[in-house]
Image 1 (spheres, rainbow, N blue to C red):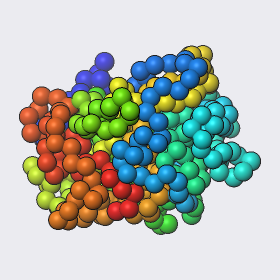
Image 2 (image 1 turned 45 degrees about the vertical axis):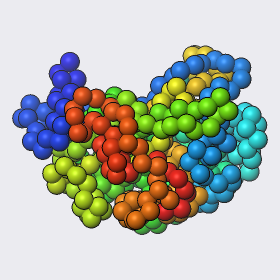
Image 3 (image 1 turned 180 degrees about the horizontal axis):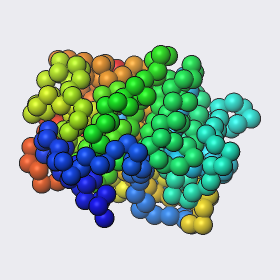
Image 4 (image 1 turned 180 degrees about the vertical axis):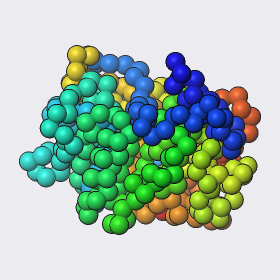
Amino acid sequence: MKNKIMVGVLIAVAMCGGQGVLPAVAAYRFTSFKGRPPIHVRTSGSSVPQGISPAEIKSIYRLPDSGGSGTIAIVDAYDDPTIENDLGVFDAAYGLPACTIKNGCLEKRKMSASVKADSGWALEEALDVEWAHAIAPAAKILLVEARTPSGANLLGAVDYAAKRKDVVAVSMSWGGAEFPDEASYDAHFSSRFGAAFFASSGDDGAGVSWPAVSPNVVGVGGTSLELSSAGKLVAESAWSGSGGGVSAYEIQPDYQKSYAVPKAKGMRAVPDVSYDADPASGYAVYKTTGRSKKGWYTVGGTSAGAPQWAAIAALGRSATLGKLYADKALSRPSRFFRDIASGSNGDCAYYCDARRRYDYVTGLGSPQTAYF
């Protein structure tokens, strides 16, 4: 109970733009961090796919039908022993090119010989791998499985991906509350080979999540899509579960200073960008690992946006933090983003409401291209 109280205080302070930290939260450090995948299940165990299709999401976000280069690294916890088979079923259902270990498209890296399977994390891994491949089918997929979701084990998996020369983007569909020493871990989210890092902003509404809040990471918030019966976009608004706010510990990076993010008070603002996350407009995912229902799931959450933004990076090789903010600041930002100006993720007034330009629910907006 004590840890839950401290986490709640951290979120409340960051959510409202506060920069002070109460002494009571000082005991919460990186050693106490445990990653949680922000994923929500709408339906499960279906024999046929239900939910938005790759073709529909590509049309909504103006992404190419094919393409991608380099390797997209998916960092998650625990093992999904059926991921290759499940990806094959997914690819067949949507007419995507096969991505297998044998043909060199898919690679699994267990960070320990004793990595155990976990049904909940297996669903996250299936979502991440299947939809990263759907968005950038010509890119390779590297699934890095941490032994547990502890901070140390997850960062060990991140480090492995960051050191790979072939990796162009790293997806981290997990997060947790901020902690006072988080800035000392920012260097883990960098690569001398130029890989971009993406993380989910969280699914509990207003509040700041690490590692999305790191100034070296593109924090991905969530939106809701209103679709016609033909699957065409009618409107896009802020999703009520999207995480966001002002960091209690990370100072404002230069790319946000140049853009002049409002009311950040010299601290890091999140999220940076957004993507469909509402389970009501969720994604079809095929999963068979675990004792839970096997088959097709329909899922949502900001965990869906991180791997798909990583795939966008593999498509255009230009979705970096500096470029994203520079393009939003241009005279015609609609070439790059759909500005989300309606919806909210809480009752904290300015920091919880979507609005024109930058906001603390959807960031700069949703993609309208793969080339930034």
